[in-house]
Amino acid sequence: MRVVLLSGPNLDLLGDREPAVYGTARLADHVRAAAEAARAHGLELDHVQSNHEGELVEAVHAARGTADALVVNAGALTHTSWSLHDALAAFEGVVVELHLSNPAAREPFRHTSVVAPVADGLVAGFGGLGYELAVAAVVRLLQERHDREAR
Ligand code: DQA
Image 1 (spheres, rainbow, N blue to C red):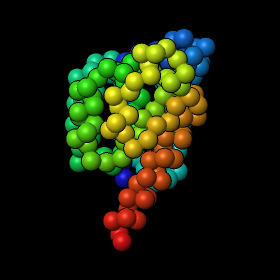
Image 2: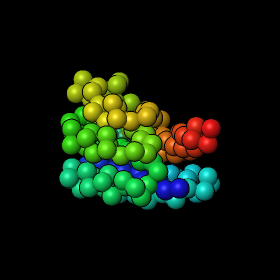
Image 3: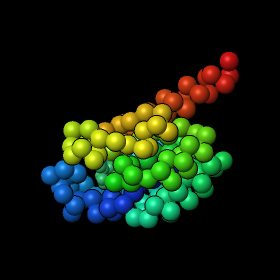
């Protein structure tokens, strides 16, 4: 089983970027935590970070038929990107939306997520712990899908 972690714009600056909001850990630290959590459950995890909307859309296309689940922290594209929404709608596996901060408790423009309608669920507001929680959610959802299909 394979999971792809997608990181959107400006997440490559984690550690330096607004540490009071996003913490001091770097993206590589979060990716390592997610990959370790995945490995502990026998899942392979690949990571794609891009500051470009189209590259994220293409990463979702590449995941079709090759990945069982996506964990998506789309950064600010969460609030604006209908092309990412549509790409995710065409992905048949599990989708978990992820945020370090809790967008619902921040500025009004962050209160709308266009990823949410095409996600199975959302992990937000737990900082770096969210990467492990999102993988745990993927594991559980894949297990549930497998059990349903076996019935
Ligand atoms: C974020 C929340 C978004 O609103 C913001 O634009 C980000 C990071 C988060 O992880 O908390 O870039 O996705």
